[in-house]
Image (cartoon, rainbow, N blue to C red; front, side, top):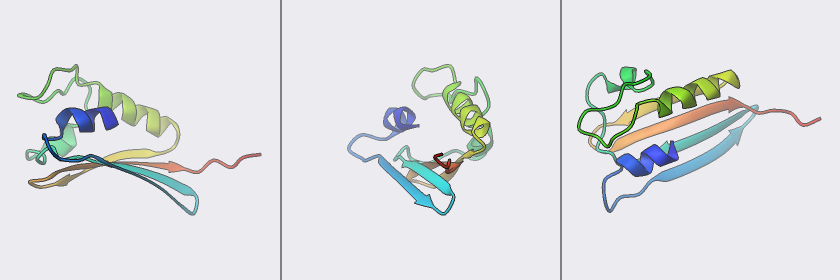
Length: 99
């Protein structure tokens, strides 16, 4: 997510990383300034090999693999479009108890 944020964010803007714990959950968010998503991109974003035309080269596997990894740990990986600004990707995981 961080790599994608730096890859797609517009020059002279910032990428924000926020990690928080609340009750039994851990949430990690990465916000970029990619300019926002085109209509329907939120649904296609995590589909394997769904690279975005006109964007930098890649196989279109990164977000798909990331989501599968997070879901294997009983979590979720979502994206929220901030129209005209960018995207916020959020990982939500259960907090593991130490023995």
